[in-house]
Length: 250
Image (tube, rainbow, N blue to C red; front, side):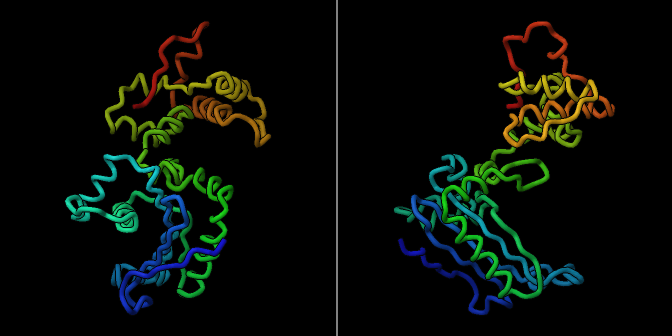
């Protein structure tokens, strides 16, 4: 199978004014590599920082909701365009922010940064490698690359609130989530969570087996945060029987 070719959009002088390369990698998936000249983009605010920023992104048209698609098209003034191609649609989504961040490089040697981005893009043509990259955390909220592309902030907020993370608890409150839901939210698979929580509360050593359920680690982190006074104990763990209703962040 031939390696898909890149297409270029941007200024003639990419190094001075930036530009973007894109290609379709199959099944309505598009890779984008964008170079930004930070001196040109930010002016004097860029002084003392690397001159170039290069980002690798993925847009999967099959994974974008209808609402996000319409918002992206409206933002780009393309909502009334008939017969939009997948290429044009992917460009709109990438510009709007409905993309998965898969790599970022900063430095003063643009060609070296681009080589790194191309190398990573080629490695992610392997679906197994791509699937793994899509599950990596890409922001401070804890969103995965896949969730970021889909505009889903609540899944990460849910996980972090289960773990008792103070910043995420505050963010959830700012979104209007009731305090009792924030305090008592729990995962669907709550048994490993309880095991992790009780282990931390009893001063036990955290599991290191990578195959351990992720809920266990969130429970352990919640126990540590409770002991440190950073969040209250989840009320539902005190109950002899689990309730029929699982508090969830919407």
